[in-house]
Figure 1 (cartoon, rainbow, N blue to C red):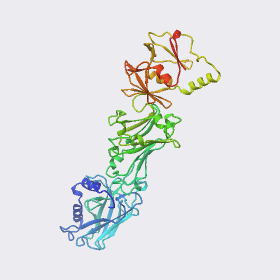
Figure 2: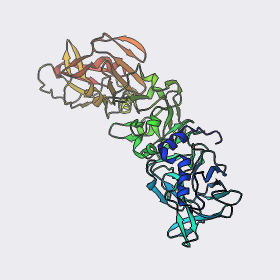
Figure 3: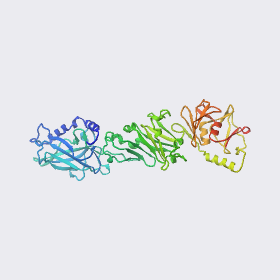
Figure 4: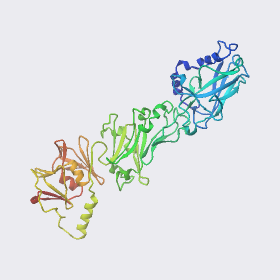
Length: 496
């Protein structure tokens, strides 16, 4: 077997049980022979592959050939045999043999397809092209031969009691019917294009059209994991979730365990377009997105542990094709969101900064020095220390109002996202706020924040109130380029 890892071959033969050892199969043939020919000796001495298939995993139109060598004292030359072909589908049950036309152009006998051969030089050769249109016709399993001997006394063809699996030297089975289930996930190159499906010699890619693909390197055992392969359509995740604005790619370790431990490259098509991001280039894409991973329990992987899951330095973005590439070391599920939303709860507001810039530009061009309209003239009757907020001249409605604390306006993180169009992410330790490529980190209780990598003192620390993260509004707004005006008579904060 040319360069083929035989480990799976041994395992497969062992899986057929001791009864499938070749020496026992030849005893089966003895039972079918006329008494005058039977003896305690083995009539079959060996099987030899005659085709040039490296792994002896066969697909439609592949050349197949195997020579059966006989002890001519038991099976004399000039003996005519009929060989019915089929597939043994259950490793533990020879009765799973399904007579089927494995080779093209075979003859038919009582609904079974056979080739007729006459022993010459102590052997017969069964050969031809595999008959598996679309690689969908043959079931998955080992090729089997059921021998028929002509009984002169009865004038009929009598079969051996059981079929014989085509396994050369007890370690090299002839396999057919390996396939990929149909569905949204396609495989390239096709399995028939590999020389060795026990130990693949080149990359293999699983693609979902319009979303992305996952590419694995060489070294996969497809044959040994053919049952897992049938779970491909449900075990591979490649999708965009509009409700959370998230791209995700992953492998289910339970159903596709032979892939889950492997490294791979995930590529997302139309990545930035789907995420609603613009101005992204091959050099600044890391500022615009946040990648994350979920561990085997479905919990987010911490930032500290993320480099053991993702080759962060190996990530790349092709702006011409809008394709994002993420090399990963092993699998569960990987996610991509606009910066600030790798995993966990993400709040994404709808207000765009462009409208505020347009307003500011209008004030500059018209020479106005006065602030923008401060909103409706009426004062909201708010309880306690709650305050009104106006953005670009329009009152912002909240489920939970901003409030004053020691002269500073505090706003819940969710409300900040909704009001200003920021992305806010809480990882259980600190808050990450992102907008237009600028990133701010704030840790509750600390007196400074990290703004684009630069430490800055806070006018009021963030804190957790009734399970909500509340943030200092003025500090955040001003560091993201907004102006803040306090209208005491209206108990109002004006942002412009």
